[in-house]
Structures are given as structure tokens and as C-alpha cells.
Length: 334
Image 1 (tube, rainbow, N blue to C red):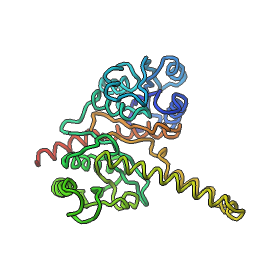
Image 2 (image 1 turned 90 degrees about the vertical axis):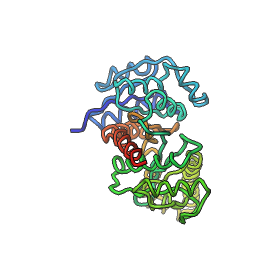
Image 3 (image 1 turned 30 degrees about the vertical axis):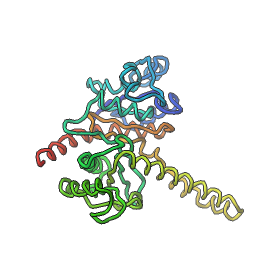
Image 4 (image 1 turned 120 degrees about the horizontal axis):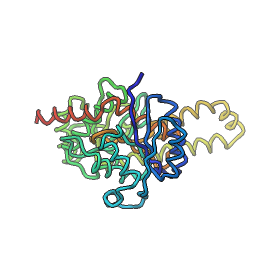
């Protein structure tokens, strides 16, 4: 029997909310009998769902943070929004973690300002599990910190190694620094400084990672600044989408191709599932007190389900506590 956990869910998060959110939560509850949820959103949306599901509770809210609003300003101004209330319930101990497919910026701001940072963590980092060949790779930061000092990247590496061990099941994670070459002397002055610090402070550090290494399975964790990480993430997502379109065009261009498509239909569906962001459900925000996973705005019901379940796994694995111990250990060495 798994540990019982309670996750707050933003019922208004995502392009197709609340419908897909409610459907995804229902799937998550069915998959995990020890999971409970608190749905945050308008009373007329969350009330009926909670009334018909034994392990669901309604938390009525009156405000909503839109995708185009300034994240920090909206979080400070809209105290009764579904995102802020969801994070506040974690802060108050009524829940263990928070999931939303709403505004990424607002989720980051609310988690940092309301839930709070782990003591010693200078900057929380947003990670994304990518479908690398063989085993997945965690790329972080992918958008929380556009500008990073070398010491931030050290903490990203420490937190990423914890997540790789506790959630991804990698016994001995290999951590790489995204750079333009494998040699220690490659890259900008900042990259070389980060390399030296990572080598000294992070036992799991395995050297520089080039862009081609991200999906090659060479490293389990790749760290970079949020600007570069976000560009990499969007480039990977765009490339995957275009490749599938080219593949579809090629298969549909002739009778022979169409026949071949029928023969490999199941294999292609499996491949698409491996590459889909829905498989992992969202991006973990590491370095905050509690668990927070941020889903894609275009999340499907499957993505919401997997995101909620990923949040529950993060809670059960005590990722926040392990990160706190790791960061404290690093501080003592310094």
C-alpha cells in the first residue's frame, strides 16, 4: 500500500480546461487508490465533481490568471486565483503538492512566493524529462531563470541528480553541462567557470554535453540556463512534430507507403507515445518546499493524469527533503 497523499489541482489550467482537467483527475484517482485531490476553481466546476468522487474535495476560487498576464503581478494581485490558492494549501499543510497546466510563469511565481524555496536554494529550476534514446534525460533549467551564475548551475546539477535517482530510477546519474564542445576549455568564460565549479562540487558531474547529447542518452541530467534550455526544449518539440509530418507525408504518398503504414501502425503509435510530452505529464519545479509539476498548456486528459501522478510520486519520494539535505551538504563543503 502506497503512502496516502493529497494533491491540489488547478481546475482552470490549460487550453481545454476545465473539461480535460476533470477527466485527467478522474483517471489519476482511478490509477492511484491512495491519492486524494483538492480541485481549485469556480464552485460550479469543482463542486459537482467533488460530490461525485469520494477522494476529491472542492476548493472554490473566484479569480483566474490568464496566460498573457504578468506572472508575478498577477500572483500578488489575485490572491483567490486557482493557482495561488492551490499553492497556499500546500504551504498551509492541507495538501502535499500542486499540479497545474496553466500559466507557467504564474505557477513558478506562486510556487516560489507562496510555497517558498528550500533553505539554501538560490534559484528553483524547472526541469523537463525528455525521451532520450535508451533512457530519458532531465534537462534543466527550461525557463525559470533566463540568466544564471555558475553557482546556480551547481545547484541545478545537485537537484537534477536527486530527481534522477528518486523519480527516474537512475542509481548513478551522469550530469552534463550544456556546452559547445566536450573539452574543459570550450565555451564562454561563464561556461568554463561553471565547468570548474561543477567538477569540484558535484560528484555526479561527467563533463560537457553538446546539443546532440541531449537525446542520445549520453547523460541522465543536462544543466543550462533557462533561456538556452527553453530554446533547446522548443527546438526539440518542433523537430519531433515536423519529423512526424514528413513521415506521414512519405507514407501517404503512394499505395505501397499506405500499405506499409498499416503494417507499422502500432509501432508508430508506440513511438509517438514515447516522444509525446503527455507521457511525463509536466515539468517538475525543483528547489521549492513541497512538490510542484507544471503541465503543457495543450495538455490532454492523459497528460493531466500523468502530471498529477508525477506530483504524487515526487511527494512520496521526499524529493524536496532530499534536495534540502543535498544543498545543505554542499554549503558545508563550501
